[in-house]
Amino acid sequence: MAKKQSDSSAQLQDDLRHLSDTVEELVSATAKDTSTEMSDLRKRAEKRLKDTRSRLEARGEQLYADTRESINNQADCCDRYVHENPWSSIGIGAAAGVVVGLLLGRR
Image (cartoon, rainbow, N blue to C red):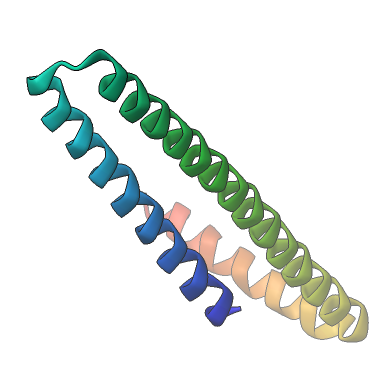
């Protein structure tokens, strides 16, 4: 998983570097104001921007899915522990209730 994140970060950095380079070229070409050259640079900038956005969206969706899966795994683990150790779970819940009750009672 760490390798996957490292590769994704490297890809994102590379995409952002390319986008930055293209924008710099576009700014430089604006000074010359050659319409054909400007049109080509704008098209390249738009394409790279769309590609970067789609990669960012895909990465965001993947992060959401991974987080959701992790939360579900933790909930399953907690549920399994409670089912395997019901009396311990009741004791922990009661102790937490006493502590919260004491803290609220001091107010």
